[in-house]
Image 1 (cartoon, rainbow, N blue to C red):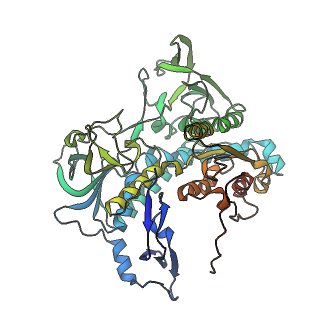
Image 2 (cartoon, one colour):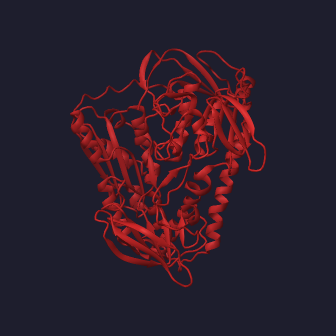
Length: 568
């Protein structure tokens, strides 16, 4: 999952950002680094040029005009091709790849059959965070004990359902426009229509009822994303039996809603619905709620996010059949035991949300034209996102990123994979370390994680013959958390005591989604505990939760020498 890259002195690049020019100068002796997602500029020193200031470069200069031109134009395509790169799918992954490709001087086009932004912007991450922002404030206003502790008095809180729905829709529209404009500004050709691969370097696109257009490209990236997965036996009507796509429109707030699945999607919607007054019933096929989380974090989260709220649950059961409400009758949910398949009592609720995960959107892509067969709908790829055909051979010049390949179904993972592909096609080998990619659940409080869970780490330790240790810190010892009267929380790190390698970090507490990145970057850069424990954190901040976590770890290995300070 990592690439070993040899860096030598001295490379030089410049980049323009608003009111300043940044010149990056690498003057590094040849050294092998685990290169996991950072652009090369992060590995060198840099100088800033502001209006009226003098820029000092150790290794030479490039003019502002030259630098601006390299970023604002879409480049000239390779000889014999319409484009250097064509991307099918303009979600977060395709967008990230397009921007990085233009930065590398590639003439780039992106094909989108729906709207720019994909699932994340239009039907996922973005609108759901708008709803969760509302639910967070509602919880604060409704928690009289919390407000009283802060000396605050607030009259009864209420909400306008349509106003909340408009907030989510307006945010999605704003971000969608931002993404569109960011690509247009640098000259990416946005081609409207359904994209189909005709061969390793040929694509067609077009709208239904219109003639197709055929274009050629030196390289092709498939980034078509995913759609909600609905198990057999469940009838979705979009009104009383819904998926996350429908729920984000918030067309109603039912008195009682069943949520099938207790992963990220189900948990976040339980936070929204209970804050707005609904009662929730979870239906989970596995024996415990939140099966994808570290077990210790999951238990704490259940105690805080589920048990005190108007939520009950059924675990170890399947929803074998769900029938929408009709003719005055409620939604009916027929349950069976997940192991024995014996019938369980039928539930009758006002609505049901199907949160059983997502399925890749890969049909109609013309994969048969390049001899590729999907696996459970996913396009098979290697560690460099290169597409593999049904005979196990690499398909030249064709890559697949994001949900469509199933490696890690997160928007930022798709973007990272896209950037990694661009590094490769521009001549620099790059392998993304997926264990360094963080994930978060935006409940109140939040949950975040990166790397291995404790059971996964211990299994790996047994297989490879190393010990595993665990360090923990509580939010109750953090000044900023206590000032916010939000001391409920835990940070947990799984690591190797012999080497100081960080294997995984899991956080439950206030702003956990923001705190996780110090740990994920440490894993990405291969930073060991012996080094990161010397990092200085501002006081009083929530970041000190991680500071205490690193300092509490007991490492038996030799402490790395502290590097000489650099005068700035």
